[in-house]
Length: 346
View 1 (cartoon, rainbow, N blue to C red):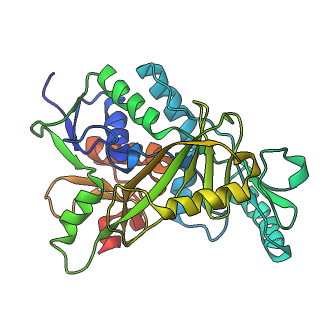
View 2: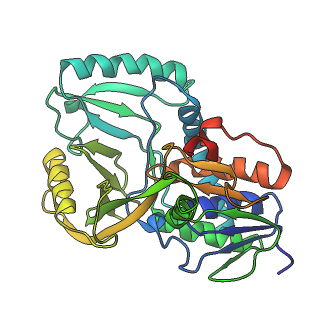
């Protein structure tokens, strides 16, 4: 391989998306991760790409909207170049409406979505009876249906990105020396490194637990109900998650908290009853103090860059994170929202 133009440390979704976005523009890239692609939270199970509610608009919500709209083209191109599908499909999301007050708010947000989503997606309120056996229970008899939410299979997505990067002449390695411009996308380890040199926490690890069920609902929308995400995947499985734990003893082990999530999901979505649990997963997700992705100049390393803090929205944000980081690293063009800069988490 020729001398790399860009080296990315970290082969999670942010690192791989930045590498791919640089490679597709003609840069030679090197990705280094001692644990391999998707070894951290990016190797999880859920893969829900869902928007924030369409109100109180800000840069974070606008960035996320752009990224969700970009996702179809992003993952189609990755699949074409790599020969591997990411399991992406924009099938929407269903959410139950609890009571009359929640129903009034949901209907109000219909207008917000019409204005803020610019006709690219819809937020609708529909009777549960119109949506079939997959629909979750709803105390009010009504459900929110949005057409912006999508799903992908996290592990399939990482595999596809690695293959696409290599198809463009890039490297994905367990070890190696940095060459060219350097981007740090090292997740929890990267946040902890910064914490050690700052007077207060820059970010922290949040443990998540999820499960995979043997149930083929591949053409159905995802569901958010009972505090659980239920995400049908393209391979004939359904993911259920997840917990958000700030305090934990073992980051890699599942426990009764996952059992509670599964119980809530089954109570909310009767179609899950009796489905076999084929995998239980636990891992740590990187959450920045700002609760937004951290993008831009690295706070500790002069002339180097950071892409971190994906937390629960990393896969949904990935297409635009890759694009704006490639702009910055390759061309010096800075389109990063102020709330995403490292200073926002100091």
